[in-house]
Every structure is written in C-alpha cells, then in structure tokens.
Length: 126
Image (cartoon, rainbow, N blue to C red):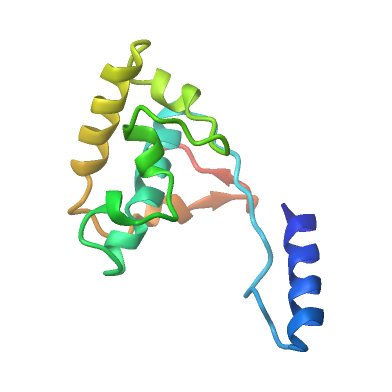
C-alpha cells in the first residue's frame, strides 16, 4: 500500500506540476485479530460518509463497499465472502444480516476504541 501511495503521488505531482503534500501523514495498517473487530471496523468505514454529512444513506455513496456487501451483484475488486460468512453461509441471509448490522450503527459517532493501538499496529483487546 505504501508503494502504491508513493507511485500515485509521484505521478500526480509530475502530471500537475504540483509539489505540495498530497497525503497527510504516512499510511498505517493495523492488525485486526478478532472477527468482531473486523465487523465493527467494516461497518464504521461504510458509515464514514454518512457521519460527515456527505450522504443521508450509505447505499448512495459510490466510493464505499457497502453496496457491494448488501447487493447480489459482486464487485470484482472486493473480496466479500469472508466478511459475509461471519453472518451466514447463505449469501442472501448474510447480505440482509450485514445490512441490519450496519444500519443498527448509524446513530453511533466516532469510535475512539478503533484508535486505541498497542505498538502502533495492534488494536488493544477489550
């Protein structure tokens, strides 16, 4: 991911003759050890556009994975089977369950526990 950011930034700056900062801070990846954290993080990410007021329903935001998780048509860029399997082995049941899971979190604000890291890359266990 860091290599992708570097190459994109370099190409953008050369193309547009812009040599200011393109991304703020360095790319960080955290290790998510529990499936429960994976589910919560996925819902949290899918709801970010809603929380900042870009959309009123996450299904209308085309730049997140939510639509791919709750609709039958697959997105070739997204591996959704592992996440949906946490809800059910039946794809249709899993998609409906994920939709209920995400919509049940629409009223939550920013989750500080997702920023509580150990050694800058492990989520602390709670």
